[in-house]
Image (cartoon, rainbow, N blue to C red; front, side, top):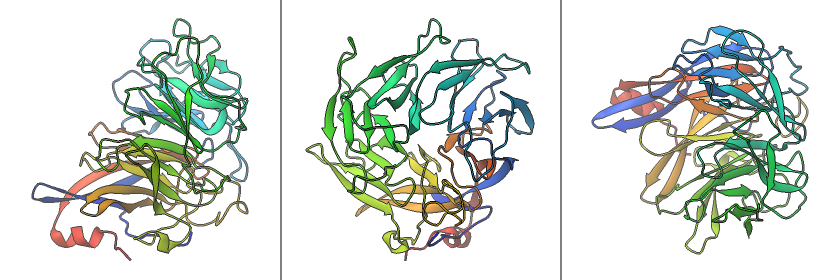
Length: 411
């Protein structure tokens, strides 16, 4: 890594002013495992006690202390120089029994499954419901607006989603193409969703543009495509999760994403009045690309959440350490950093201020957020080649000197 913005407790993760108080936001790290099982994780209520639990790879951990470990499927640790069989994980109660189940995308281009929560420590039945899930950042989200999630991905050269048969979610999920056939493949990087044109319907984003969801999905129509470069201006690479939010408060949806998941770059794309997008670089290949001197490679996972309670959504991302092993990708052996970028509205525009959470975890192909302590604060969960870790969000009132000392310094 070219430059590491250092100010830690475990990590000084941010500051916010609340009324007349100065509040310092930090994280405490809890390592659930030091073995490599998964590059994804999920937060859900797996024992129906009303408390959020954590799943990563073959295990789920009972909240809020996360010290009780339970098996989902037979555990198999992997060599960090290789890859796991769980790239992405999602929690959802598919069969309506009140226990959250776990959806797993094991390897890009292979099948997608869900594990049925038995409600006890018996084995979880495995259901293969998707024959091929392409894309390294597939999302399990409510795309169609019916209040239930679909699997957003590409498949066989088409962009689209898998729809669940909610009368029997164990049946094969139906594939719905929204695009004409293209060159998308199992290792395509970057996908997202959100209402980009303000019509109340979620659209689909990839690096090269977005597909507008029509008013009716009857007959599985092809969605209208709008070309737009959501990358670095080249036709190579691609990022990770593509996030949609009104970043600058102008009532138009903007896009946040990494530029190249196996190289460098994090940016937000500001929607203009004519529907085009202007790129604003947050961090790039060089420390001088960031006003705070931060640069790290392999930003292979992103999430969006209000980390400090100011009503603005912040960016959570970091380095996917050893994404292609100790000799692959730029600077693979640099510290496995995890950051959150605090969004600030200033007189001159939007600023994303980097706050280091940890330098020995990073992200996987997924970084998960959720309140695992039940205190109303957003925690961060990571599964990757460093193991499984939870970062519990803390907040404390400090004096002016401590507040100033914790602020990242502009270069």
